[in-house]
Length: 336
Image 1 (cartoon, rainbow, N blue to C red):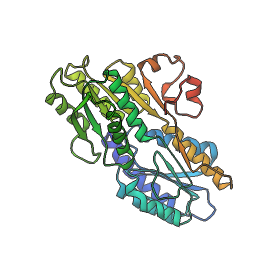
Image 2: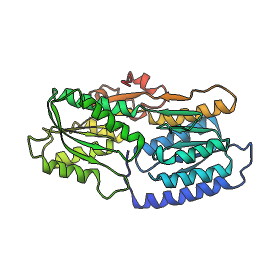
Image 3: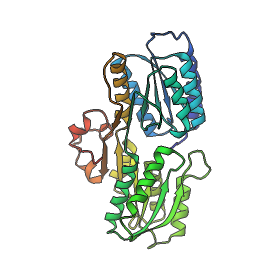
C-alpha cells in the first residue's frame, strides 16, 4: 500500500490539497451539508480505491465533500484534521496514515462535537462513531500460514514488513505469530520498509536475493502488494521464478493482473477497501438522522490467487469485488 510517485501527479495533488482545505474553510455554517475527508495517502491503488469509495458514497447518499491527502505523514494529516475542525463540517472521515500518530488530532475532532468516522484502521482511545477495517494481524498470520503450508513446513524465507505504521505493523506481528507453529521455516532476510525512507522494497529484495543465492531462498512474505509485485519482478529478473514466490496484502486491479499472469506473486489478501469508505459514509448519514450505527466493523477479506481469478466469468471485473454485493455475485467467500 505504498506510494508510487508520478511527478506531475504529486504536484497536482499538492495543489488539490491546498484548494480543498481552502474551499472547506469558506462559508462553513452550522447545518451545512459539508463533509471533510482526510486521506492518509492517495499515491497508490489502495489509496485511490479508498477515495473512490468515498466519492461514490457521497453521490449516492448526498453531501458536498472535500478531500485532503496526507501523503503518509501523520504530522501533515494531524494539521489537515485540525484545519477541518475549524470549518465545522457535519462529519469528518479519516483513513489513518498512522493511527498512533494522529490520535490527538482525532480526539480533537470528538472534543469539538464533530462525528468522526474511521476507515482502514482503528485509533485507540478515540470514540469514533464508526470504524471499519480489516484484521491486519490475521491477514499477516493467514499469508504466513499459506507460505509455510506451500513449503511443506520447511524452507528459507524473507520478510518485508511495515513497522512504522501501527496498523500495518500488526501484519508483521501476525506473520511472526504464525511462524511459531512452523519451526522448520527459517527467516534468512528481513527488511522493514519506511514510506519516507531512502531504500525501496525492490532494492531491499534485490539485496535479499544476492545474499541468498539459488537454493537458499524459497519465498518472500510481504506486508503489502506493492512489495510482493516488486519482489516478483526482482525474482524474474534474477531468473529465479521457478524457485521463489511472494505473497501480499491489499488486492485490486493491478495486483490481480500480476497474479493472473502466473509469475512469482502467488496470492493476495484482498481487503474490502472500497467497502470501508463507502460504508463509513452510509453510516454517517444514518447517524446524522438519529439512527443507531455499529461502533466497529471488521470488513471481509478474500484470499485471491490465480485459480480464483481464472474461475471468474469473463464479464465480471475482479477489481469490483469490494463493492457491496459484488463478492457474493462472484461467488467469492471471505476467509477473514
